Amino acid sequence: MAHSRGWEEVGDRVFVRRYEFFDQNIGVVLGRDAALVIDTRTTYRQAREILDDLRELTLAPVEVVVDTHGHYDHAYGNRIFRPATIWGHVGCRPFMERTGDARRERIISELPDLADDIGEVEIDPPDKSFDERAVVEVGDRQVELRFLGRGHTDHDAVVLVPGTGVVFAGDLLEEGAVPSFGDSFPLDWPATVGALAPLVDGIAIPGHGDPGGPDWVREQAKELRAVADLGRRIAAGELDLDDAVGLTPYPAYPAEDVRRPLKRAAAHARRELTEAVSS
Ligand SMILES: [Zn+2]
Image (cartoon, rainbow, N blue to C red; front, side, top):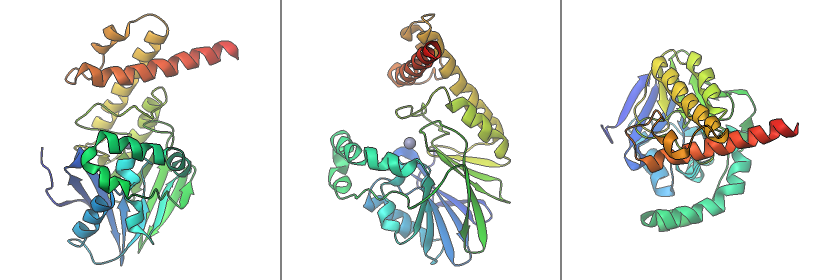
């Protein structure tokens, strides 16, 4: 797998750079005399690295940032991009305000190498938000933001770059690892990626890992559907968690990585059952 291979132009003046840390994709859309950056990474140091690398493409200022969601590896570098306007789904700011301080403490304990860097981060959530759809100007071109439903989080923003066939999907799509279910809505996620698939007529950029085309996106929806279905069967008492592990679409990954998604899917399915009974 190629890392740190520089900017790759995936559409007309649309670029992706793959950072080794978390195998993360950062997107850039260039308009006339302005740049838009998609996701800002984990620390100020990492965010500044984006700005430095950007100089290979343009000297224009970053006027717009889009946070695909409020997780630390996507949005904790925000502050470095000010005074840029930062966009996120309407759920992004409250998520970051609710979780920011606790998450920062958790990262400090889980990733001690980052302790100093993450310690200086001030949570700086998006100042512009949208519900379903927004059109954002960057220089002479427009970029479309969409919310397609709950999935990896309750506020995943998808970025469409009209005329290029490029879609930035954030962590709604994940390549090279089991998708991250920690804040997810496992029962909604398949339909959300199902709604994303017809919007991809070229290349879909996941938050982490290799990009893919429409077939890959449909395949991801199918895998997520399988996890949701297994969660429902566990919740219904038809299946043990341990037996379900072997039935997931992730045979190549460690069982522990697969148990977490199943547990969360089962918990949400149990809640759904309880709500169905009580209503
Ligand atoms: Zn995430």
